Picture 1 (cartoon, one colour):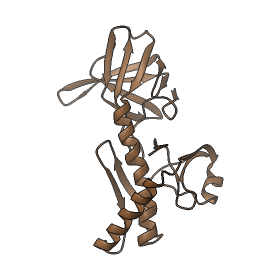
Picture 2: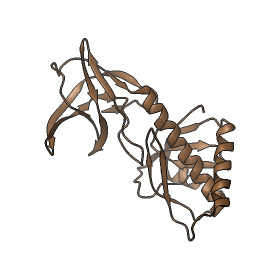
Picture 3: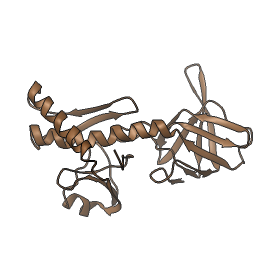
Picture 4: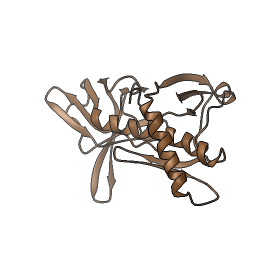
Length: 214
């Protein structure tokens, strides 16, 4: 299957396979498409929602997850004609908010290292359309002054409207030699995606979606 969600929020797609699953008393369908703009939950970023439509038939996609390198779309029902050509559409407004939260997380990571020290490293995160949570280790409770400094740095960087520099298919060794930070617990292949907001501020390996314009 092909993921096109970095560049497009909708595309034509066909259903390759599906299955019915039961969670508690609720039945759901898991759908695999040949192409998809839906981002599957990974690296702390939640999965996309949206819909599949063919003619008058339209079903909601309530979540997107990854399983065995497949992108799994969750739905409460299956289309009446599974052999149709569908328009797969991501919820644009929700994705836009998630994207801003994820980019803000990168800025916050860099600001934390700037204020607290380079020992700070991401240990986990949660990025959704409502908030961003960043987990890290530090040897002391943060002071109000430190928190204020980090907020000021992040807000300053946002106001600078730094252009997103996204590099795809960069050899992993080359990316890490240039100083790109890898996220805790993430597994990377031979080729990686590098997200930069000012090469002197934030350079990270990341598979998530990001804000190109603040």
